[in-house]
Image (cartoon, rainbow, N blue to C red; front, side, top):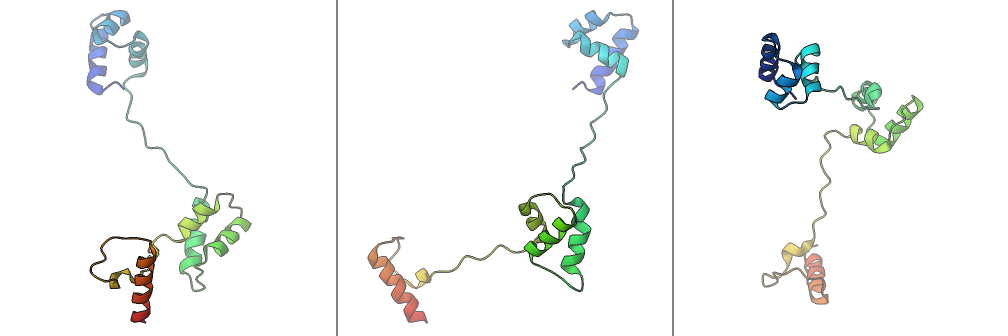
Length: 140
């Protein structure tokens, strides 16, 4: 991409009477690039692409269904409803949009914290399993 300063240098050289081939040799650019710069001008910064999702037309409906007076939190039900309305995207996209701020599920705790203090390594051996089982039984 050619910067504004380099464009001005190319334009000044052209105004002073240098040929396109000579300007290309001086700047190290291809002569077609120099020709494009002189005919089109400096390129402006690219605009960011507008990205849209297949789900965009249904977002208002989904938000209304999730927070309205008849609130629905079941992603399968909401997915089925928008499919009837014409949604053709994937289920994972629609499901992930239905749960924007849901906390991650917590892992189930094991009773390993009640093991004997001398047991520091994690093992799946029979002794370890029996210690875990007895610790869990004692706590309940």
